[in-house]
Image 1 (cartoon, helix red, strand yellow):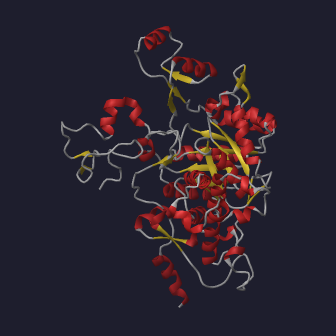
Image 2 (tube, rainbow, N blue to C red):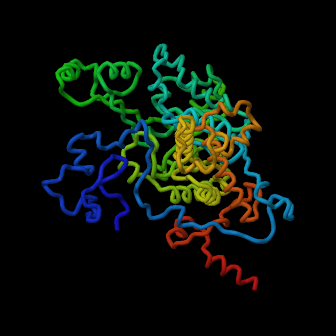
Image 3 (cartoon, rainbow, N blue to C red):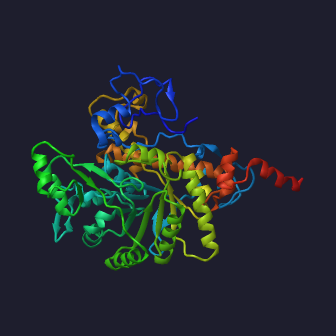
Length: 516
């Protein structure tokens, strides 16, 4: 069988003509006929060329891999226990899931309290206002994604450096408006952002305290690409310092453009060309500017590179590294990259556990570690926390949180228009009746009726997964996060056991025979 999807996908708005008869090794229809209008990816390529590499309508959609990986978290089950209690008194009044403590601190020196061990990872598209606002309401970390300044129509540069970005300021304020003492908003920068001085501006002018350097471009690690509509925009972006291909300042290219000839202009993100010396010095600079938390964001690269990144983080006393497993990309990522590149999350986290354990035994300083890549619900998150424990203490969930932001907003708009979806009519006819967690928000905010339904949607989503985590903790008689460990999960397949190094039910039983 093939793990890869066929050459028809909702990501590219394509379909194969005979989905029931496909040549698995190529993904094409078994019979390719001269009468076909080309509805598959090859047909789209014949019409749109290199544009067919990318997903469909990236401005209004988010994306993830369609590949059927041989191992994911469904191959692992959650364990359960029926004696004792860790983290509370052994009595039925205290040992109850609502009292489970899932709070955690972020940061090595400057501690930030968080309500739950979740991060809403880098996003700067779709319903970002509610994404950031909902994170503040929920009391968790949230990250502003890369390359925001390229979208800022009111951006002001001086000598090639940012001195004003109203868009970044608006993003930051969307979080701060609902901040209630928990969590923080982190600003991410890629290589182009660094060249433009984005973090320097945000730290000194917007009082941003937490920043993140990204090892790569676009989603995961590939170079980001965006088509530029005309030569004037291409010249403007080139003047800002972006890499534009072909060169719009070349007179021959310009003449060809005016005559309807040549390639469409593309803005291509620069790959980071960093090393230990550059990064360590840059981290010192950021701290001197006033940054209290320095974070790294990296994808599922070669293990040699992952170890190198952790060593740099250790030497520089980085606060957090987020490792992103293969299989996704909310932004404008090539479809085949999302499907076919990198280390899937279970493999990546198992590898990181071994690396971090060895480094800990050698007395390396270890930053906080977060894992992301396909997490959406509490069962997956619990497994992620258990698999990496005690070295991986945070889980980032991006696509699901943004889905909550978009769904909440859409439902709210329909309620306001008097067109309540039939699926929700059973809950009532008003915003207050339909969105159950508004009652909770009334404890923290005045005029909750003015809060966007998208932000309420994010808060409610985080509330749901928080409650789910607490229930699974109680199932294992653990009432503080620190007690979650690898014994809380069991591999169901030989491959899962081999990759994770976890004990199977048979392994556990053999050990327990000695107590008989």
